[in-house]
Image (cartoon, rainbow, N blue to C red; front, side, top):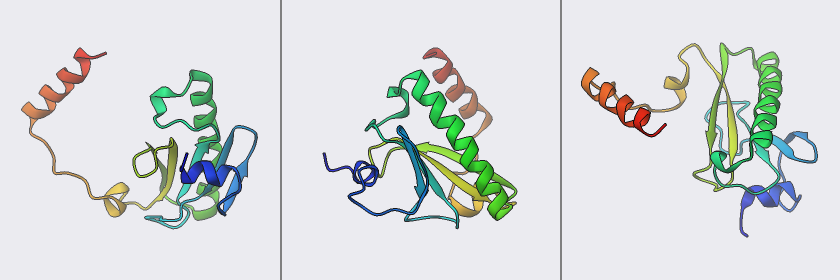
Length: 130
């Protein structure tokens, strides 16, 4: 497997580690939108967060909360934002962003607001699949 995050967990690729235990590792994002942006990943390769078992999911979120508190103390942002991703690298990663008062809008381009009708339709489509 040619997964950069798996190589980081094995020590084959250097990283700026913040935390590591037997199951997870947290390190600075090499391509941050904001200083202090941190990734928390499972050492076990899993591409999508819904494929994690519940115990593993709970552990990564508790660890992400712990790391977010450290980011909060370090950078004193308004809040620490959280995104669970796995697109650029097909390996689950929780991205933690120290957010300014403008929030994600300052660091991530968002789509324009949808109409009320579009919002209702979208909500109904998702509810139908619960």
